[in-house]
Length: 149
Image 1 (cartoon, rainbow, N blue to C red):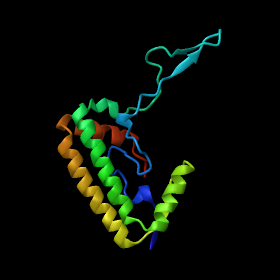
Image 2 (spheres, rainbow, N blue to C red):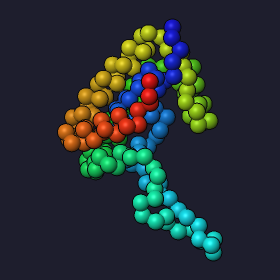
Image 3 (spheres, rainbow, N blue to C red):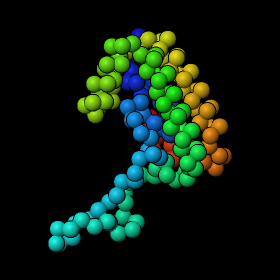
Image 4 (cartoon, rainbow, N blue to C red):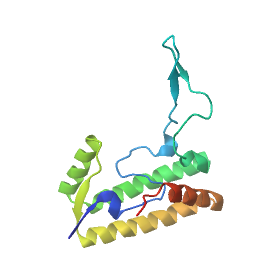
């Protein structure tokens, strides 16, 4: 048995980078706002163009219908992924999430294969939701921010 992090086994599930521990996908969360504090101590929005956040899912310009479909897909994939784990592993994930950490699990070969099959099916479903332009943009974003190996 190989010791892997949960995210390493299911790298890029939904290539939207929907992490197993995130309840709300980035496209459903409010955009972070960069602020500045004036000399009077009042907080004001930062000047336009000063947000240093990396490109986000917002660049895909998803429709409400696409967002809803992707949220539903995320929920389904999460349930499937969790069902692959033993109760002990599920508890490890829950505790890691609570502490803001990435879980580290020892997965059986069978679990790894099940997670890979879930990933493959999820990506196919995701691709059916996105337009060709959105898929291309997503590939560019993933390429730019993918971990270097």
